[in-house]
Length: 268
Image 1 (cartoon, one colour):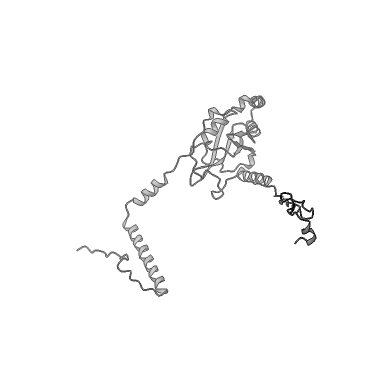
Image 2 (image 1 turned 45 degrees about the vertical axis):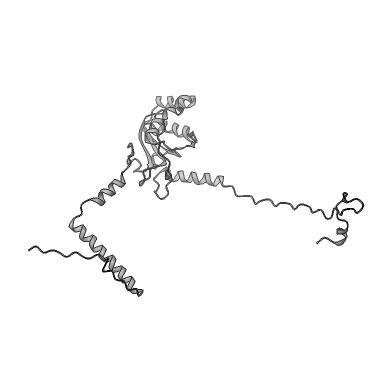
């Protein structure tokens, strides 16, 4: 509370001139409190980039599991990209064109394998092979897909017939902006290539009609042996329910709705 002396010197309406107000005392004018600066948030950009680089390194020499999947699990439709509208780096870039011509004059016997990550939507086997063929001959290619849904995991492996061409592609396409995605492209040393890397390579993925398979399995004619096993399971479940109800003191008559074992008919 302000002292009495300061209250007397506060603003009052003058009796002789009601419209005139006396000045405020400087002591009563409250100074604005300084606004505390918010605590500086830790920078997460570098952490995200480190996490993404570490994720790419995990896929580089082997395979990822479906649990750590980054596939198209959303409701985005898989629309294939028209690669004819994309820029041709090998023809437009004079430096890359000169490097490729030099590599063709001095071909290598060893094949080169590259890893390509952060592939955009609709950029699958046909599109990847068609686009990278501008650099050289693509011998093998595999886009990693989810085993359950078949959707792309946005990374793949490409093998060129020349290791020098693969090196040029890795240097050119790394951090290349394609359809809003910054590609990650790295060369894989020969000794680091996974022995099962090319299982299922050069094959276009086809959707598996799982609903049709399950429906056919469910509707197939049942044999006497399968019916006997199903009958046994039903009776065991009912007996288990009766036992649990009896343990808590509940008496319930299952005879009206329970499954009854069929009697075997004896041929006369």
